[in-house]
Length: 172
Image (cartoon, rainbow, N blue to C red; front, side):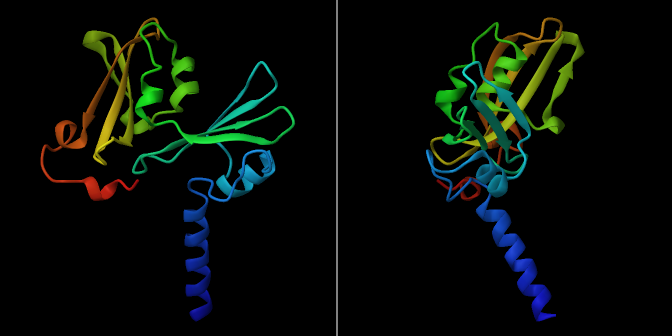
């Protein structure tokens, strides 16, 4: 029984350690290292210069999507959380769904909603704002063209239940 408890603890610890790619080093870690630590990405893009971008969403309860850049030689260039205001600010009216995916990664499918009356598709991500408040970032697409109409951002207190301090859910 003790051996099983130790094994479960080790697996849980390993899962936590790989959440954000801790231990990976730009210029030294390889694509195989990244996949060994973080698992298979949810999405992968081949860039024109031969590099690759990998997306690791950690939702719905998680508040990060890690975007990993691997150069053409298979070495880690960068690993960063895309669910940050500076990345949200890059999303502009008229962008395609693919453009948005490459900036902040995929939304949680359970929070994707189509509103027929407005012919509008809404994608949603959970993230932690600058005040360590859990928040929801939304991208609103025209349902016909698939192009960005606008974005919206609300704290969970505003968007979900309106009560309670959830700052302990965010750690920075």
